[in-house]
View 1 (tube, helix red, strand yellow):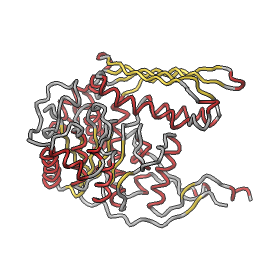
View 2: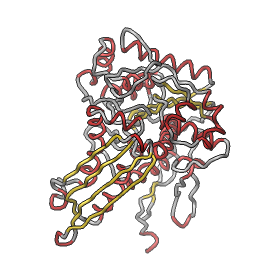
View 3: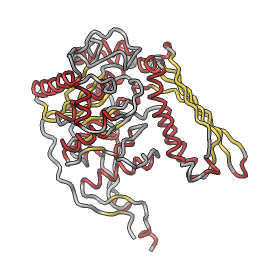
Amino acid sequence: MSDTTRGNPATIAPATGKLAIFTPGLGAVATTFIAGVERVRRGLSAPIGSLTQMATVRLGKRTDNRSPLIKDFVPLATLNDIVFAAWDPIPDDAYTAAVKAGVLTKEDLEPVADFLKGIKPMPAVFENKYVTRITGATNVKSAKTKRELAEQLRADIRNFMKANGAERGAMVWTGSTEIFIKAGPQHQTIEAFEKAMDENDEAIAPSMLYAYAAIMEGIAYCNGAPNLSADFPALVELANQKGVVVSGKDFKTGQTWMKTVIAPGMKARMLGLEGWYSTNILGNRDGEVLDDPASFKTKEESKLSVLHTILQPEKYPELYKDFSHVVRINYYPPRGDNKEGWDNIDIKGWLGYPMQIKVNFLCRDSILAAPLVLDLALFSDFAQRAGMKGIQEWLSFYYKSPQVAPGLQPEHDLFIQQTKLKNTLRHLMGEEQITHLGLEYYQ
């Protein structure tokens, strides 16, 4: 019995020409991502945190000793092939926005300042009712209908790609969290969605217009925020029709990433959970936006879903039924992008005896998110060249609320997600998938 199973390689179109990466939002995450890629291209920094640039993938049996870098195994676009475009309601160029964001030091920004100053945001589709805490929004598109706004975004995509010689594109939402919206009849079919755009329906938020524009233009869409954006029937159907890949939602960076590491470990040992209290302080634009209750509700829905799905209290009621899960995010301007997360975890062990785990994670939100933007863009472009379309569940590794097919529970266990990601790469390249069975070594 082998610990591997082999498939047939997919037909993968070559990564010719430039890859345009579009970011709706040119704030802390986007500028940290763009500046970081440029520093890596110039040999000034290492792409730490990026699977596409630094991770290896085991191929074949353990005794084969084949573990190439993912970027040497999979025909990804190279960093030198990337060109950047962004929209933002605030007109600052990428350098000015990066300085204001305060994530990267002047010493790190100055060597790439000329490059960053050349990236100016296109006028954004923006309405304050969807993100109430952003001020100074002067770089904004206007039109009579939301359909017209979407058409302007499509024109932006076409014009940028033509001007920069880009043959392919990927869009990664790095904008702020919008208010909570539930999918309604407007989101069920393409026809209903387009009619709602024509009628300026309030259920059609700006992020949905970006997703629609990307899919219509044949470029991948990845949602880094918890908004309802492309995760509803109309746009999933459109993505399948157009042969476009979509994934989301909500980058898994700090506290939730830790939950997807710790909770699987507890469940693997069949340790019980009484309660998990999480609180954060954050002072960047994201923290300010999430200070609005309507935007926080969107984020809260994303954060709360993780533990329940991993622990499966319906299957393990003695261990996990009715555990208390509380999440708080507090806007605290002095902290800037340097988020601090506290977790108090009340667990129970043998004979029900109580124990506790305490986590104090002093993280940098945009430093953790930037490599995710890169990986999602490169993997999405690769998937599309490999003939994949629609929802890419194998990219769940990067998200708090993975997008999955209707009727499926998302997988939140980080280690299962990692196996799924690497096995998908092996499958597409015609290599054996790793099962970790390994009985052949003991025959």
